[in-house]
Image (cartoon, rainbow, N blue to C red; front, side, top):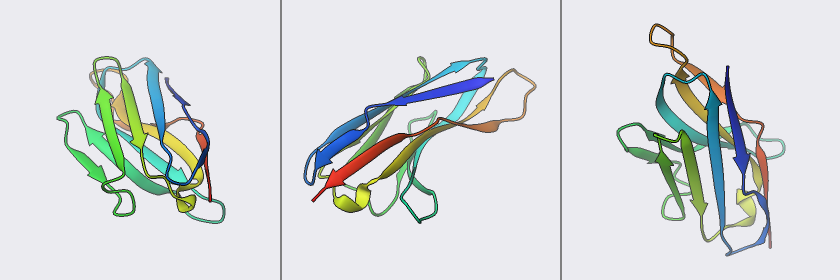
Length: 121
């Protein structure tokens, strides 16, 4: 199995910053992408940012210019630097990876348990 553990969430005032970290462990043969999703109360889970093994990144329009995703695929880790935080960024943030456990495996998506980010106004 593949396990993901997030850290770095917490409470911050509007305009502040937080850095989330996520480490994947277990039986990992290769990683295609690592991503951050978030889910606010009463809302659907949404993609925040993603990065593929070639380093190409993608961001939700709502976080462009404020959030930066980075990774160290050699260490199976991904980070999300969040600046200029807004109350509407309040959500549970989930780390996820699309990975293979062995060479003949089908790539699957694995999820972490999430970390709470709360931005006060």
